[in-house]
Length: 500
Image (tube, rainbow, N blue to C red; front, top):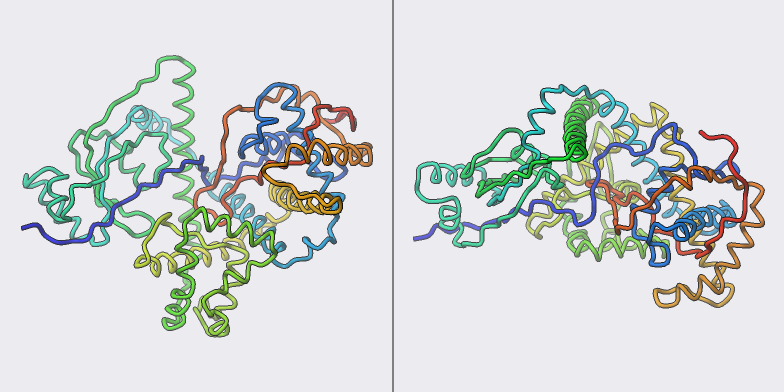
């Protein structure tokens, strides 16, 4: 008779969008592409704005015409932001100020990670060589995720005792033959614990791996069904694989150093939750956070446009418990209201991308602890003055200017009785926005400097990408591409005389 257990199928994270580590991508001494008064657009920022989000069809290629449209669009965004100024309705909204501050503090933590961890890594060439030998492998893996580690141990013992194959034993315990199988390569953006288990040493077919304890506390049991090796032959491919291995090892060791640093920062700090308040808050917020990821993202975007983040965060009669104590950290009491204010600056990050209603309280608890940890790391970044560092300032300006520009664009169109939509955007750009942007180019022309040499040398990809940062409260690396102009001429401003 089959044993009756509930299987929790592990979904090893697969990012359809590209994902990045925590290393800051902004060089302190970048060359500039554009300078508009005291505003700067680096070459790297220009490329990211073009390649890390999906460009519209009218500038998606890499020919000179499309590259000029891209540059004109990014410059036009800055001009619109200048025209909007710092005292408009959007800039005065507390929700928008929290949104920008949240982006700034996330960038500060990225700089902190780079300074205290990434830049301190020293790789051993022998380690690179050892891992390089495995980097061509692609494993076909059967896997299950179980919340009961003793159950996983019994499954492993039965397999090792020859009571059946991994799939047969697992099916006997869980009453199902639908054990997930997937392929995992070196390049796959896997959970770090999973990647380390598969690529730290050579594994043979039939190897049973586990328990692998993920950062979310779940126990993963894996079985190597098969594997193949894809060797590289050309010098270019060899160099690229070596570089990829080195970069991944750098990030791995940096994460280890950062974990040690976090341990030092959080040493002696204890979080005590008020159980009753936590349960009430969990019940109130579960419906909101259990919505589909796409719905949540759209909802947050709509909230920003409607200037009302509070409405949805305070759903479920939270107002009734707003003044009740939720937790005590380092001698400081957080009420539910205090917690909600922190969430406005740092949206909760759940370690599991998908979770059931039953799992929500535990995942919610972990997300709050992550928020608290990041709050203390942000304090350390402020102490080190990273809020004034060039990468952080430029990144903050990028986000603020984007939304300021979209506010000004929409206000201008509203004055004409026009609304930009997915159906009419091309007509609106050509008939109304192009002339408006031309007038701004003339108005601010004396303040615009363009590094034309760098522009001529810059190439753009033709591949649609949307790059996100894994495990970050604000995952998008750059704002959406600005739909503001289709101008193909670069006939304004002046050539930048001094290269940085």
